Image (spheres, one colour):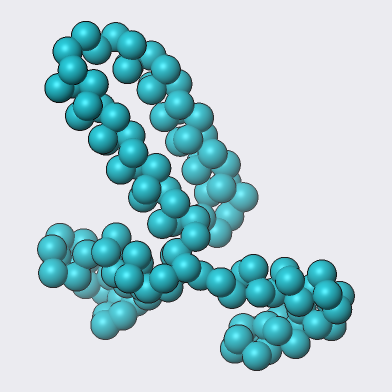
Length: 121
């Protein structure tokens, strides 16, 4: 979610999910349905957490070839974007940049960006 609109859409999705949970769960009177619904909700929140804290560490979008050039990769069970992103680990870089800025101001943040190979503004 690179744009402000994208972040707003993500927050809107979360708000919608909370409303659906509040309405849907009490309306289900059979235990198997309630469990399936709860499992789907937990899975959705897991995917959201991967998106927030792990992406883009798996580099699935562009390695081995860009998904824009080969959209058939979207259907590959062997190279799943969710699994690859989870295996990539937490993306600590944004947090380390913020920590550097808090310790040493903008010059320290700029230096941290350079050390990570990210072009500063």
